[in-house]
Length: 377
Ligand code: FE2
Image (cartoon, rainbow, N blue to C red; front, top):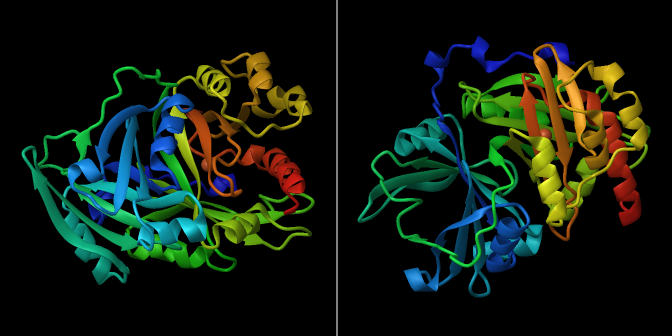
């Protein structure tokens, strides 16, 4: 229930044993990093930022980094067969491999997590170039997804050592107004949600700030359960979903079947002006889920007065929800890869700190219509 909202400001950050400054970058393993970079630039409004590959001395992979305000995406593909990256793509399709977290001390973060039961992905390593040094370390979370801790206080370069600046002087698409990662959602297997809730509590020092059960999130056919985990300063929020029993296959089951594992379901990115952001994304070819038009006939009854006109929200398919602290506007893209797995959420918060519970039913019915078309409901 929304009434269980227990924001992290209510707890003592002095006791936070895993201080995190924010999301550092997200690394996606993709089939064609060069084309993916072009997609994120032309369709999503990112700009070219950094590059690593054959020209920088790598032999097995190529990475393009794109940036939009505080959001940095690394898009990585293998340069030969038989690599871990290639195996990851073969099994999961394109998807998020690394959720990198910005810390002051990547060595301490790693040992702290390991002492508390984490599984190691990467022991602390120091990389340096003429701009200074960066320490990184990493641990596993759900599925094959990992958290990499990034310590960059002794680094003055743009991105990371061993990357070179990547400039595209003849191709500079304008930003669509995306600002930062608001939250990232993980889908985990049936019965595993509480396991990963405990992982984030015990290993990472997060708190469970909100819970939804299958009474909150269900339609005639499908159901899911979700718990939202937040770090001490509230900058990192990870809702964790698991499927619940329904008459037909849950969207979480569909994800798990096609990703062939637990993994990142959606990346929610914040904007200060969702109407212009969505207009721009739509004109560049991004496809969004749509709720029935009748949603807008009753939206003001449900959420009360809002600053925006309803007409452009209806036209674009933007959803609205309210909680005790304000309201939020949100919209979800269709999956952005061939498999029905990862997608993006665009969100604008106007006081509300919750996740749009009032939209779940309409939204999941929209997803079910897509599942029906895919034959996976
Ligand atoms: Fe979300």
